[in-house]
Image (cartoon, rainbow over all chains, first blue to last red; front, side, top):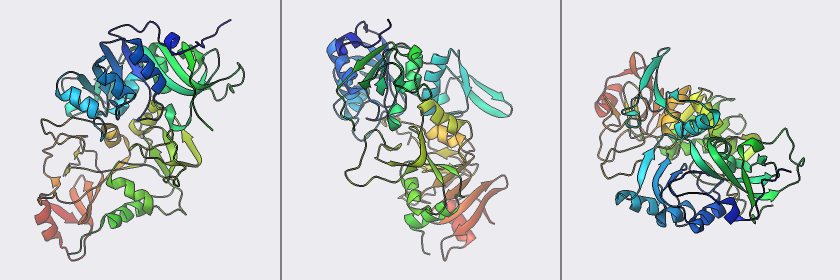
Length: 224
Length: 212
């Protein structure tokens, strides 16, 4: 019998090695897998490359992981925010590398990794600082920039419900990066509010089919 | 001369958005446009984080952490709205499916180059978000901005001196002084603040303008 449900955060995060590339879902707080991030801080892996849209807010979640000096590099689109003081300090002191990517290119690079695409030409960023040094091509009269996929060893994502085969549905705009990060990582770990029996998720509405998900952990979410 | 207020600019933009349009309103000044859309006309608001049919802010106490806009403010979903993941959301932009996006700007050049993500200051922490994808993706890109900087320099320029967000991507500029189309034949003034003439506006702007 296949059962991807693991009993707790420690099992969910087992095997994350120093130097790993880890995608973390979420857009701001929506879809951010808080418990998994806290678990990762306890787990102790360091020298990490993190892929996220942002670079942490306030002092919790991703910001706490950064503050614990576990991250060497972050790949994101929007690090600077009113409450990104942890990132700001580490970046200014040179302790954290930043790869800044336009948000749509970030999403498509993640999707491309999951889809087995070797590289793709994107019109976004052509003629800007963020395309400097990159290969470009004129295709049918329009200029494009060559972008490469972002692969990851692990993805930490948050969903609403899962079954033991790893099928997922999300909640509202918390879906954001979850489905594409699940595709792009060798091992996707999803924290969910609810585990349901096989067959309870309508096959017509499953967003991430279980093939993209390796481990499920239920956390005590409070939801109506 | 009577400058347009921020609400007057937003109201003018809203009037130029036809019913049935798929529209993205950028962070800052453009979000004001939502307050001026006629509720009797159906317009689909897109939010980059994965929402079509975005509604107004919720009543106090009804906020939902999982339902926010690109500026991470709480919003609602209209009946008939939809959620989708980030790659789909940006396909809607890059793939040319959005009819209009409305953006703020530091500078717009007379060719329609847009600079709105980075001041270029060496100590600034860069952050781009979806600005570059929006700039090149929508069928029409409207810019809403003050006509001049605080020190009185025109934000409509011959060539942008700030780092670019996108090249030749802006269709129309709405400012506190004028509404200006960017065309192959140059900048065309559609509307001006009361009491202003084309020569006066041209002097303030510093690039050639013509009347519609």
